[in-house]
Length: 205
Length: 205
Image (cartoon, rainbow over all chains, first blue to last red; front, side, top):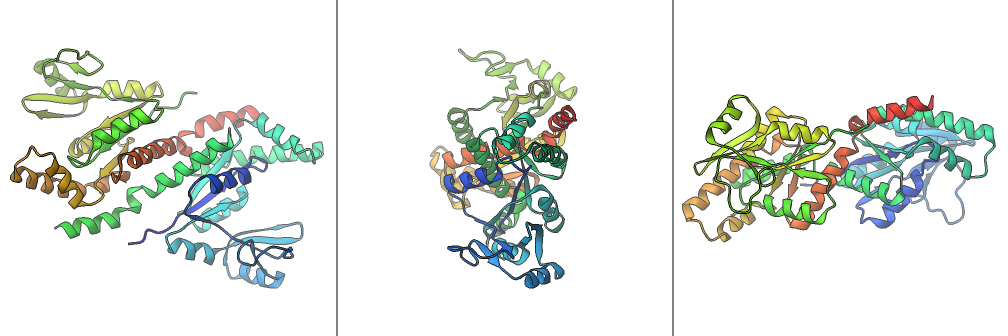
C-alpha cells in the first residue's frame, strides 16, 4: 500500500533565509520529495524549461486558473502573476511523493485554508536584531524599505500560531537538519501508518 | 524562559529490541534527556546505586506508593514490584529535561492515562516472521512459550492506534535515528514555543 505524500510548506519573514535553507536541504539530504513548480505569466527566459522551472502561461490562462479555483495560492508581483497549481500538488502527493513549497507568509496562510493537512513550518530569525542586520546587509535597500520590511517581519512573527512547527535559522545546516527531522517524524505518525499495520495484523490472524 | 521537558515513552512487543534501540540512542546521540529511574522491591545487588540504578524500597513502602497514586505505572514480576515514580518524572520535566521511558505495552497504556501529554512511540518488528525468529533465536524458550509470545505480540500490535508514532526496527541504527528525529521535531512544535515567541514579539513593540 502506498502512503500518501505530504505537503511541506516552508515559510517565514522576507529575508530570513528560506531559499538558502531550502537549497541546503535539497543538496545535502537524500530527499524523496518534489519541489513544487510554480505557474507564472512572466516571460520564459533563455534556458528555462516549461514544467521544470515554471509552468509558463498567458495572463488570460492564469486568470482562468484563478477563477476556477485551481491555484493553491497566487500573488501578483512586479506586473506578473505567480501561483501554485493545486492539481500538480495533489497528483504528486497521490503518487506517494512529498511536495515541498517555499513561500511567503501570506501565501502560506492561503495554502493552509485550502490544504490544512499540510505541514506548516515557520522559519524564524534567531532574534529580530539579527533579522534587521540581514535585511540591511543586502545593501540594496533604502532605510525606509528596511523599516517597512522590519514592520512586516513583526507582523508576520505574530502569525506563527497558525503554523505547526517553528525552526530558528541560527545556522543553515542546523535549520535544514531540523526540517528533515520534522518531515521524517511526520511520516512516522501512527495516523499515517495505521492502515498498513491493520493489514499486517489481518494477515497474521 | 525554560521550556518544559518531554516525556518520551518507547514501547513495543516483547522481543522487538526496545532495550537495544534505547542503548544505541543513548550512546550515539548527544542526548539531553534522562532515562527514567524505576522503583523496585527487589534486593539491591552489589555495585547498584540507590537513585541511579533504581530506587530501592520495601514491599510496604512500594504498596504505600501504589495506594497514594504516586506511580506512573507498576508491575509485579517474579515476586517483586517494579514501577515509575511520578514525582521524579514531573520534577525532571519541570527542569526542562526530557524523560525517557522504555516500557512494556500494557505499562505504556497506563502511563498514557496518567500523562496523555507524553510522546508515545511504538517500536514494531519489520514483519511478524522476523519477530518470531527473534523470539526463537533467544534459544532459551520452549515452543509453548514462543507461541504465547507471538499471540501477545499480535495483541499488542493492535494497540498501535493508541500511540503517536510507529517506528519499525528494521535496523537498530535507523530506528534510533528516527526516534531522535521524533524527539527533535516534537520540540519544534509551535505549541511548545509560542510563549517564547510571544515574549520576543512583545519586546519588539
